[in-house]
Length: 430
Image (tube, rainbow, N blue to C red):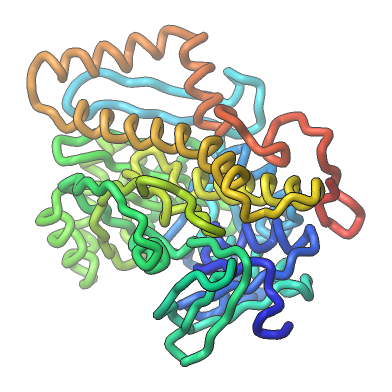
């Protein structure tokens, strides 16, 4: 591919950027991915041994998208963990709610997938597309618009240009900053600690989350060598407490203590807890770009919005961004319309911004409700959890949202879609 032969430059080759590249590449678009990270390793040993620290909880809608891209089968053949149930309770009170896949007649409420496996699965499919080029270990240092083209400069001195450009480069998106797109930012006052544990009692395919005084603690089910005695941990707490927990994860003795604290935090529901990895932490800041689009430019994923991990929806929102943007652009090209037309970009923004804003607002509300020690709010949240648990129609609605089945979904992500079929070669056909 020549340097100026791209239809679109995608800045960022993570899960969302790679998915967008695959969607467009399968439709014959010439795509260049510019990624600051190294290319994912596609190793047949992936999915064996100790699970990776960073995982994602994928909804049914995201699974359908990955299935249509012939990514899911490779993942499922290695290591994914389906969960059929969810338990959520207030450790400071008596409120509790449970969800079960049988309540809505589905096989699973979602799947826990290791990020490095998903990246490898996407990279494997991208390698089969001659119209997609990946530039790894290069950083964006400049961006301008020139004669209807996006012109970028990289830290290796090279320049690339294309009519369209996408920012998929994370919550601190350099492209967003260079484009002058403002962002609303809110420090949640929390940090998330992640680690992997082995539990004395099997999780039984149930994801568990409890709200402690300092923040939510989640045990996400993993399957290792056919056993259900591993979980991925996301513990959101104060920054000072997060630093202490991370320090515990640095020594054998400290990990023993961390395991005791995790077991206590979960109320002993999975028995003894053994920490089998380090316990790094990262700050939790909610961000929302004031606009998703500019001339020939679109933001997707964390570059457009980043939210609290308590609902595990971040990557799913980003995948929906990628699918909607690709859908709008591919439709425009079929009609002979320029994909960079502001009306087409505005349609992408309109389809995604409201859903994303609603999720950001919900996460902010949940954090404030469960972070409050006011007696009236504690009573309200406990009554609310237990009350909803007895209202099956409301529970079914919440489960459908957890499955990702809400809003203006792209066709490839809908539960019933006649707009594409999986051909024998595994490529989605419109």
